[in-house]
Amino acid sequence: MASTVLITGANRGVGLALARHYHRAGWQVIGACRAGSDELGEVADRVIDGIDVTREADVARLAEALGDQPLDLLINNAGRLHDESLGELDFDAIRAQMEINAYAPLRVTEALLPRLGEGAKIANITSRMGSIADNDSGGRYGYRASKAALNAFGKSLAVDLAPRGIAVAQLHPGYVQTRMVNFGGLISPEEAADGIAARIEALTLATSGGFWHSNGETLPW
Image (cartoon, rainbow, N blue to C red; front, side):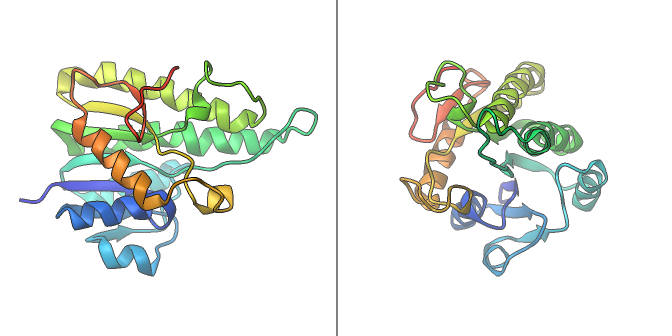
């Protein structure tokens, strides 16, 4: 039986590239997103759309839609970036980034835990901008804080889920050519997806809880 992956934010960018990667690898792909796309429909075995991962009711509906479907891999990919600078802070935007970048992955993970058995893995798509040690340029208050919170959540998940045989990774895709950065990145979504998948493949309970670049570099907290 094919392994099954569920990817949030799977309709475009890195999420879509991951869906394509796992489709080519023979996995059963379930894409969860607010609005589907033709591109996702071409590679996903199932698309569950109308899902806003910041809404408790939508996440509950996602879990209900899965039924008893077991998951081998959960990729929390949906995210949002706003560019705030000191003196022009938008606290509504900061809160929104905390909701989607940090709280939503934790909400989705908790809701889908009954579908994750021993040997399953969870990949949280984070950012090296969530590294406090690596911050030497300031700014982007909401994005940095939300990704730092996601890293903290992921580390706690790794500790709490180890007795259940579930490994967790925090993965930075790299500076990717996506709409989030106006397509100004250094690598393609496909390159990022290949690197992320390689890190997931290498993930074990012994390394669970780590924070890595998709190229394999260990990132500082």
